[in-house]
Image (cartoon, rainbow, N blue to C red; front, top):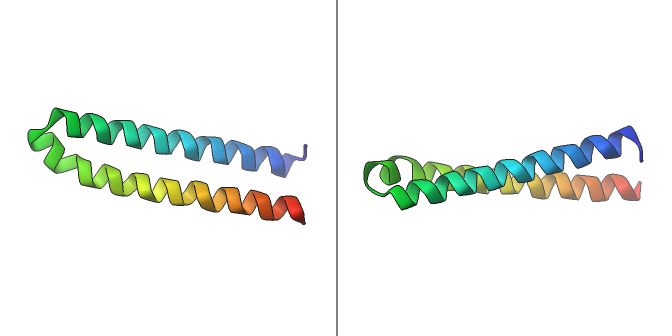
Length: 68
């Protein structure tokens, strides 16, 4: 494995962990309900979508670099 491959794998894993962390935080906020839910749920779920997009971009980049 090349250094670039290891670096991309690490970035993908970090982005996946970030996505899961944001998802869990959003679910906890929704479970709390009330003001916490109103303040954080939408923000956290929007952040989760952004983190998922990052994962997809990193995966596509890794696939593309693997073919070249």
